[in-house]
Length: 113
Image (cartoon, rainbow, N blue to C red):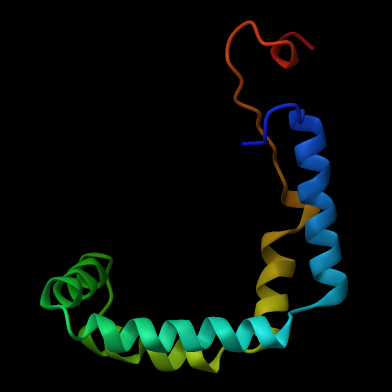
């Protein structure tokens, strides 16, 4: 949702520009390493809270994962590199498959255009 005074068109253009810039510039490796460190820390802290641990296993198992899948998840995330991220981004941000919808309150100026 754009901030007040920013049209949906301008917000969409800014998002499109951000995607293009990301695809051109690639992944910031410092940010990627920081995120990986945060994930590792979160995994460690989650083991201290039985409710969080139960929630992780419960949501994973009800989503079709196995116990082995859930245990392997931290290692899988750790193995993700810049090439993996860019390959996924190319697939997700394919403009040929893009659809944009604007949800606006009835009677708004943009809704009538």
